[in-house]
Length: 325
Image (cartoon, rainbow, N blue to C red):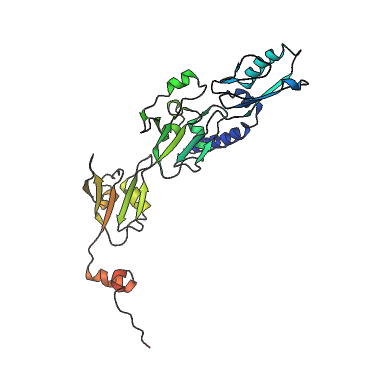
């Protein structure tokens, strides 16, 4: 378990380093595939007349002054485009020394990640990135995260590998027809290939919030408790609510549970003492359960003790107060 946590932290740290280096590292820049909207800048050593700065059009082409035809730039790397344009310049200049770079990357929208992550943000991708790395870059998930991650793909990826596109198939569409796919958070953390897809520019990642359980009545703190990917039992919920108050009726705890496909609730009565003593199995709670801890009836002796110790607030607060001089 500790080893997995360490690996997860290391992945997060490395992802931050790689993201920063991606803005300036030339080897990663060469791997960038050019797309519409990108601004390309080229300079020829000692031949200023052949310098150019152009924008890739919607068809993926660029217009350069010394070529009578548009040059296809779409889905090419800087190195590939440099080699092609160098051949064109060589018609007019002997042994041209062309430096070419993508001056501004405008062809790809950022990836958006929000929901139950520690740092909701937009991330500009400069290289191939998978879901686990994006999740790590966002600081990991919060305590309220459920077990599901949803990835929306509003537009087809630009210059994507056809094999990778085949691996990603939408499971559902939202009201606007945007395809999406669901992934198990636990499977993503384990690095399973089928749950760790390549993320493309423009993708929207949502870490869904865990469904809540409500604990009310005679507990130390009324709580809304999320059901995490590991589930939540009755004893865990009571513990997170601070335990029982002194007046709690532990032998008769009521769980109000939604009936299937209905807004009505059924009542499940549980003897907590038997669970604590191992005579009854702990109860696995379900989303939207209401755990209600009632108040046990107290005798006269118990009420008097409450008055003496100041515990019976509802009784003493209504008594008149006088000052004896």
